[in-house]
Length: 462
Image (cartoon, rainbow, N blue to C red):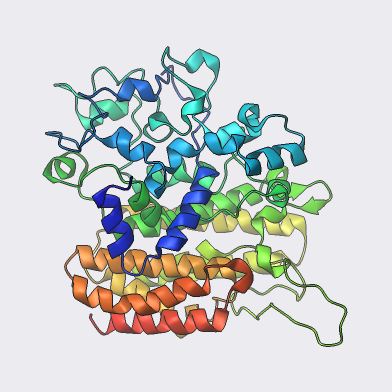
């Protein structure tokens, strides 16, 4: 059953399409992860250790300090907020079995290549008495191994800082949260946390991620005075912007490693834009091109383009929020795309440079102060002529409409845009979502038109 809080987010998020949310939820079940490299001797105690009625297992969120119904939110059987708990179960489903069979992995429920992202997958020596792999992506996947802080984290004199010192992951830090999420929402070098092109050919869904929006779909806490006192109030623009920077940093750093950047004699096509190749092939005289010239992606015609959905967004972020670094990032981006048409070694070197630029932007975005006009500035650039012309591919367009959705919600939350005014913009945001609802029916011209209309309406409210 969907809680009122999740229902409000899905129904009142400016233009967030519930059908699109369902597809995200399905993908979440196949894309959620836990770090498998443990930095200390902490043990993973399992979901049952958090589920008492005096802890996080209440049926209603009426706790004095935290809601205490977090397990119920995590377990919701059909909404996006319950996707973590369903992650292991889908391995035993038809799709999971087909993928494992095609790849010769044996049972998907026992394959490290699957469990790295579908469960809290840790060595036996790190498992407490109540730990269960079949819990799926449990509390400690995101919050960190609890052996050192579980018994003390709720009692005085424990503080958030002391809990973090004992192994709790500081998810209020956008860089820390992004890197936990990206381990499976993009991939990592850890065991079982990289989705190869072979996996996608076998049936694995396309990977997509946006930190602030996905955080909202998974949120199981209230941002109240207690939360703010302990962790400071989260800023949606900061989380969205840092998430974009960390996604670019992660993608390019992995691509720069030959172990991940190639698959046999071929490039690892996971990194590329799927729909540049996956199109109707005919031998007729009248060709049907899906390729559009992209002004910021200088690659030879016919070469598969690197999936630059986050690069496009980060370019907009840099121009709006960190202008001193915008030109160097744009230059590194163009050099990277250009190098893709030269040689593997050139592309890897250019990827390393782009990753470093993205990391510098992440640091700047994480540390800067945020003003009320920031979301307006980013929206202006995303929808402006220089950026909107880059929305030639499905993945970049999906990322763009999620960005406008997220940033408009930030403006509503800040009181800069009324709920009523936001509701009036939903028609065009929903049009944009509809244009990307089905990859094989992607309509770039209609998408750009809808996004421009929505962004223009937001801009007039500034």
